[in-house]
Amino acid sequence: MARKDTDTNLILPEVNFSDFGDIRYLHLGTEWVQGSMLLDKPFDIELEYVQRMMVWLLFADPGTVARRHAMQLGLGSAALTKFCYKKLKMKTTAVELNPQVVAACRLWFKLPQDDLRLKVILADAAREIRKPEHQGTVDALQVDLYDHEAAAPVLDSADFYADCRELLSEDGIMTVNLFGRDSSYLRSLEKIAEAFGPESVWAFKPTREGNTIVAAQREPTRPERTELVQNADVVESRFGLPAKKWLRLFKPVC
Image 1: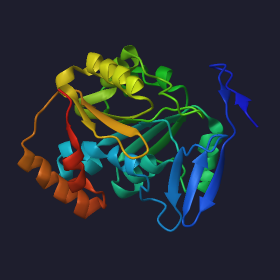
Image 2: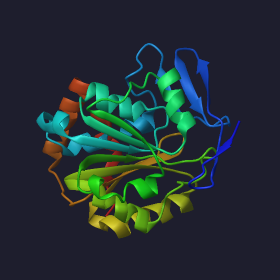
Image 3: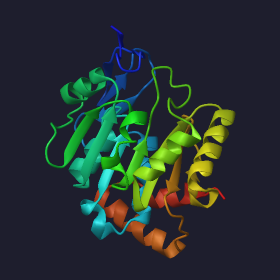
Image 4: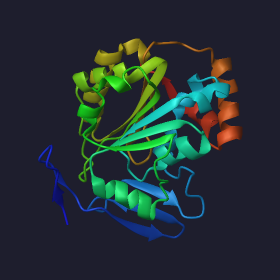
C-alpha cells in the first residue's frame, strides 16, 4: 500500500514488479515501467534510454573511469547503480526517497549491499545534494526523478540544476532523463541551459518511447569527432554499450 514520507509529506506509491520472458520490470503502483533487469544478466542495462544515460563515457579518458565517482538521483531498478559499481568498478552513490524502492532493488533486482565503494542514501535528492560533503566530488551525475505518473521530472527547476552543477568535479557531466510532452522537454532544456550555460548542453534524439537524454558539462568542451569515435570504440568493446550508435543520435544543443 502507499505510504507517506514524513519529511516531505509526499505519498510514496507501492512498489511491485512483473516478469515478461527474460526481463523483470519495476512498477510504482501503475503499469508505467520505472526500470528493468535482464534476469540472466542482472548487471547489464536493458532499456535503451538508460544505456544512453552512460553517454558521459564518451567524454572521459577510459583509463580513469574506475577512479571516478558516479551518483544517481533516483534509484529506479538500480540499473545505473549496478552498472557503475559492478561493470565500471566506480565509487557509486545513489539517492532515493522511497524506502520500498531500495528494498525492492535489494530483494528483486540484485542490488548489492553497501560497502566501501557503494552507498545508497535514503533521502530527498533536493536536500541531499546541497550537503557540503558532496560538492565537487561527482564525475558522472545521473538524474532520473519521476513519480508513479511519469508525467514530468519531480525536480526540474533552474535552481535544482544549479545545485546539480555544484556537485560536479571540474570535468564532471550530468545526464538527465526527460520524458513527456514537447513543451515540457523544452522548458526543462531551458532550465538546464540556464544553470550550466547553453554551450555545455548536449542531447540525444528521443527514443521511440519518448525519453530524451540530455547531458550537461560543468565546463563546456567541444571534443574532436575523432576523439569521440575513439572513445566510443573503447566503450563499446569494453563495456558492451552501443556507443558508436550514440554518435549518430547525440549532438550539442547550441
